[in-house]
Length: 549
Image (tube, rainbow, N blue to C red; front, side, top):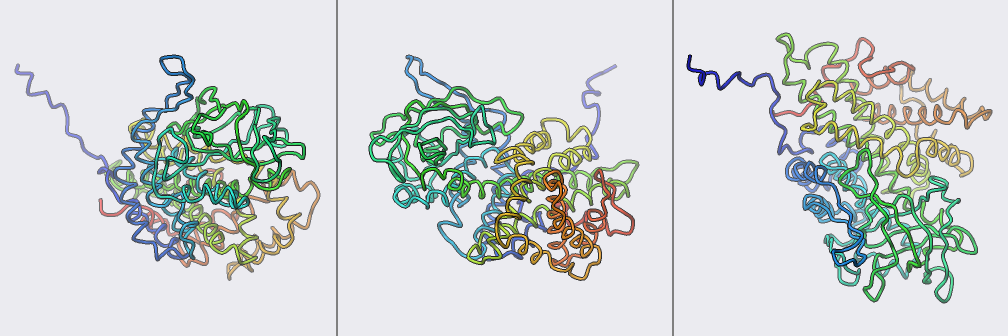
């Protein structure tokens, strides 16, 4: 017998076509509609161009950057201390593309209506390709409001923070056209409780805002340690205070900023996270002495917003992969996407994804209009509401999307395992779920007008009796102040669902709004795929599925 005739054992069939090179903006109808709805239509060509990058070269770079993790060297081969973290070239490709396209600067450098929404849309696309690089991008973007509280430092640093040039060289700020900014707050003994920080700040000469200090202490979590400077917290005689700590001193020597090790993390593998020590590190006070938390919270609000966008992005990419797979995969001679139970699951995932996107971009619109008191109060509340709810929903949603693909969604050749490992970081970073819910209570109880602004935003149900009943239940729940902290998660969930339902209802897509309200406001749906009867699941699934493949 001539065995060479059996060299080809089978024909590969029943597999979806590759999505490689897809323009992630053009295959995402909900993103197109919500970006336009919230004022970013003027930036559509810019967002579209980034969609092509994200689905093509940046998607490929994302795999390489995660397969080749950052490497830390404390000393060079001669024994000199260098504290150097080296990244794969793919990571630098991701950073360069994002900075050149304004993901760290657009709303600050070119403020106009829709600028925050446009930047959020591009961030949403970037994080689908690779989320780890989003950490230094977000921190650089978010540093601007805090630094503006100290005009003398802002004059020095903001031109380079707002630059669209990426320069990863390990040199002082004076030698760069563009810089990146990190943040280092938490310590071993305190974690989220930053008021327990023990790092001390000692004035070099005169004391007070804008003056130089030397910091002694440590930070337990310092992500992106190769950033050019860090906003950090340290104790002075007047209490916890915010400082800007550069990696190089003005004379170009290394600052006394020492990396102890890199964290071995569940996900977020392309991004280095470290433990650091300050041994007399030179830093400059930002904002009022003793008011470090109110100062740095200007930055935290923006990073929490990006957590919302980032988790929405991970969900969208998981949905894209699952819906595309099911649109081309047959079981029992019939496409998965045409089978009733799978339609129920896919439609449920699509509703979760679009609701997350809608709330995130609505938050972007609020940031574009902070001069409006209603929008400012909305932003104050919804950074915490959205950070809690959207980031909490992502891991289970991504897990379900992977399950839609079976084994194909479980292997590392797929992006789904990376999305799943990445998802928990946004819940943990910038305050875990309980921290967000307590912040919601704080905003509603201690900041005048926030509760009224919430119910003004929710309205009267917009003609939908189910939403009207949900809003009435929320109002009643807030009037009852007994054990309110115990109920904080329920209350925050109720706010999030009410806002998402209202946004979807206003947008006018009946299939989507009816599907969301019917499945989310009745207390049901413990797992995805439990949508009630009578919904137009075919339309919901078609809306979320990439076309043209």
